Image 1 (tube, rainbow, N blue to C red):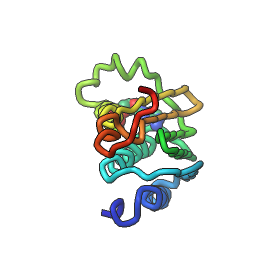
Image 2 (image 1 turned 45 degrees about the vertical axis):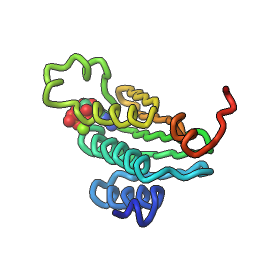
Image 3 (image 1 turned 90 degrees about the vertical axis):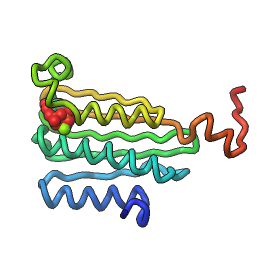
Image 4 (image 1 turned 45 degrees about the horizontal axis):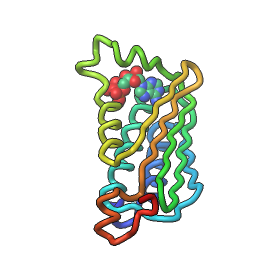
Length: 154
Ligand SMILES: Nc1ncnc2c1ncn2[C@@H]1O[C@H](COP(=O)(O)OP(=O)(O)O)[C@@H](O)[C@H]1O
Ligand SMILES: [Mg+2]
């Protein structure tokens, strides 16, 4: 609801404030540049990825600080979510006995990234923290046709 009214960035900032009040974990939202806006569907997908990442940070990380970086140029949208918590071993995540009932959060994040034709990377270092990087194109090929843009690369 607030996504549609306020737009993505103010909604993220407001959510970050709520998150701080609830958890005491500071979230610094840095907008490097916004040269273009996303449609409602992508706004929601990005917001859900941020929500699930912050949820994991609250649940698992023992972090004190989170930085969310956003940069959107006309071609690509780039998002980084970085915490200074305890980190985790990605291998353990994949091989864990509990992988049947735990681990849907990260799977969900990856699924959402795929829906955006995006590339998602998770880097985690024990004791240094966790960094999630998402990058996706502002428009899909089929959409750029619909809107009558020419693709320079062809
Ligand atoms: N920011 C984080 N800091 C530390 N550990 C994390 C973080 N995010 C995820 N994890 C680890 O990855 C596991 C899988 O996360 P997820 O797929 O969301 O499942 P769940 O949160 O249900 O355990 C978590 O159980 C936790 O061990
Ligand atoms: Mg989770």
